[in-house]
Image 1 (cartoon, rainbow, N blue to C red):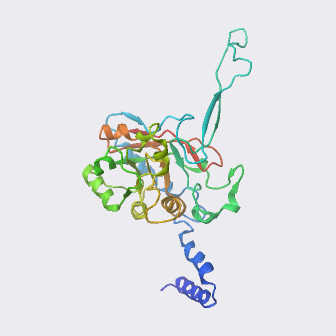
Image 2: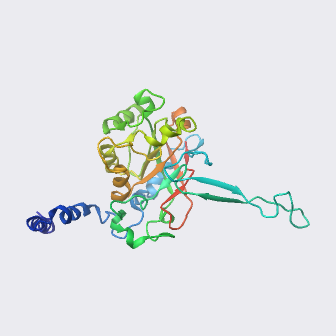
Image 3: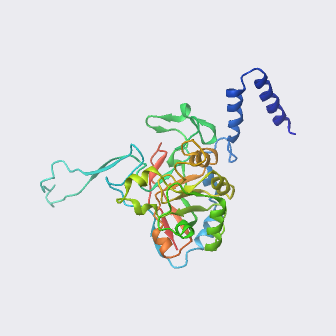
Length: 320
């Protein structure tokens, strides 16, 4: 047994004997997930896995040149998590009546967006979800979170995500056009779909799930937001151990909700983002990929670099 581990055990035993085990020892034990394996100063988590070799292997997946946008259109009617909203305004002071500027009759349009960055298809960064105010790599909220954004782990730090993407069609696996809300995907479920689609997960992959959930938008927004199918903790740990960069799909949280085995709020996101530095891609529209049976592809994402943001709207592209 290593000396460090032995000292930890002795320390925990001493705390227990002193009657303070319940809180202090629990906190000490729970801190074992940081610092990150990528280094104590790391700010990009699993994005470290996107090496030039991984990119070159992904580029070889392009066979036809067909491109697939993976975002959903965003407007004020798109259902969003709790308090979030989106409003776009075309604002041209002095020009609303058709006035023009200058002798060449120059005119233009300009938009103002008043919205939350977590509406629509989005990249959730590793500073978006924490555990008891501690975020990826042990960063405490009091040390880096400000009203003008985060001073570490911001979206602007995330490199372009160019890698192999895979989509797993859970609608075919369950034989339903829309997988029922509350359905938890197990490791066995994922492995069955991988086998059926002739896939294996590789280090550096983006793994997406197609559940049919987007079909509810505009038809049953209440159900869309109250529950959803997705991976549970068992599957999350397995996927993380495969070395993926990001997980996600066509739901708004990318995990089973509410969780049938835990009272914690979004335990999968807590584990993936905070503990493993793995990104979450929400509301990914994979319907066209599934229709064409494109199970693996070149995934390309260059997100807006909003300094200090923990999440941002995106339109990633799949290239086959």
